[in-house]
Image (cartoon, rainbow, N blue to C red):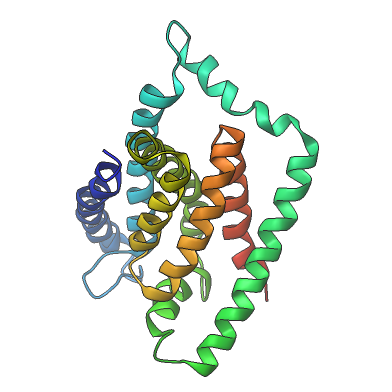
Length: 228
């Protein structure tokens, strides 16, 4: 069961791609200058549709299976996930931590790019297209707000919880982290994602909530646009 949510992201991505293609094709008639890749799909549109699908479907799945308590209203069960942010010290630590981690990663990647340009080629193509150049509001909203929530639900939520039932709490954290790395589909970003996946996984397990890891993930993604 731990493998099913990550595998389910593949057909959902295909659906999102075709939906983005149709939207791009329709919108491009009114706005011929709309940016699209070589397959005729606007990347921000595709990215938003895919993450919205993840958020809606995986979010519902996670709430119904792992969050909703018996004889308890769904909204009340979800609210309990947010009790952890009542601790102001936690927020004071998470916000600067996300920026510092992104700062270190950004400069490490710049160092690697100059030393190992071939190794970093895929990383710069995939990640660079999301944070450099003319970044649209649509893409910014997706990367900063939607994607962190969707990915935390998918990996620290569904995947980790199912894996924990099968192999135990600590191994489950490493299982979901490896799958999170594979999900990013390139070596450099994948290795970084495994490390972050372990950190986020321990946060989710310790707090019994996805909210702390969502906050850190959000600040981390936002910081990519703030670091010169």
